Image 1 (cartoon, rainbow, N blue to C red):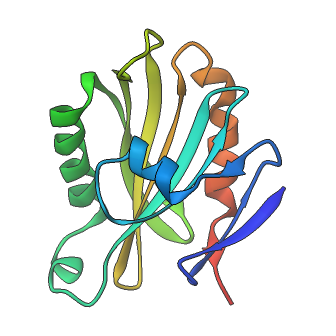
Image 2 (tube, rainbow, N blue to C red):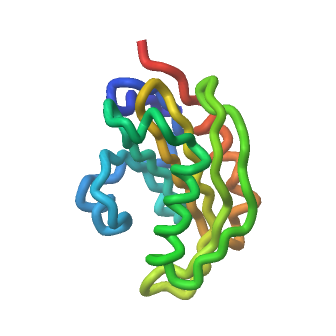
Length: 157
């Protein structure tokens, strides 16, 4: 497993088969301009990214991970082709309650339907939104990769 420190706050491990995405690659895939880090596995067409938002503003103190995930879902519905929310997620990541959902969509310039999960958790005053996606047909067999990555989150020293 490879290791990294995200935003000087979280340790994360991920499989050797993934490579870190450049800012240019992330910009082509994601429309928001948040602090983002991502990895990809070109062989299996999988991608995982983490966005950090919030901080010292009042919004980070008065909202919760469920509301942040819901807002992201509304944005995805507006921007993704044939977007469908499939199921809800409620789990613990890095000792915090994480909320999110599974979703599917059709990517631009592709005829291969994608399946993914968006999971949001809060640590201190920041929200972390993790997105994992792969072709829908292999998603059940590669979902364990996502679980391994999420289980590896821990506070940086």
